[in-house]
Length: 267
Image (cartoon, rainbow, N blue to C red; front, side):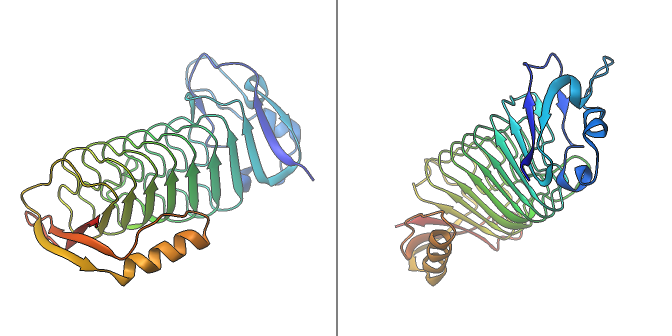
């Protein structure tokens, strides 16, 4: 069986809510039933059949082709299966997801992986603000799983993150790890202002030194970390190779709050 594929017919004139197009919700539906699902967000009704050409039958793997930044909620709340996006994704990509796998060949909008509890999201391009942050109506950000961003990430990356791993291949905006409760964020290039603001627990790993460090972080000097070597081994085993080594300058904070978090700057 071929993957259930949704090919965008043309650029939409309204934002699309693709939240209903999940593997678990599409399983067992007939083609006509799928094409009748509502995806519009304005007073003008819009169904799947109006916006997409639908092919394939295997709902365990859902594919989107030609999507752009107005295609919101792809994979939001998913609990199984796989979603592949050949194009860009809008807001709320994989927000609140519990299991499954999402791959995006382009970039994603705001709140990618917000309050997700499990599964994995791989974005080849950039991600907007609050990736891995707090979903609407929630009190905590990401609570499990892995987010990989090949390009840059916007501000408030991992805000109120509780658990999980975020890897950014490019730059990250201001307030990375803001009010973070636990978890790990790895940023390969530059990080914006106020990284670790309100950090309670958890780890920020920075490959490049930040321009500014909050005065509420205490410098512990350069130390050896077996944890970094283990993380590097795991990343290589999972096709996410990063040279971490084993030495890093450790900064403890944010001392204005609980202060049990750490910022590791590779040495």
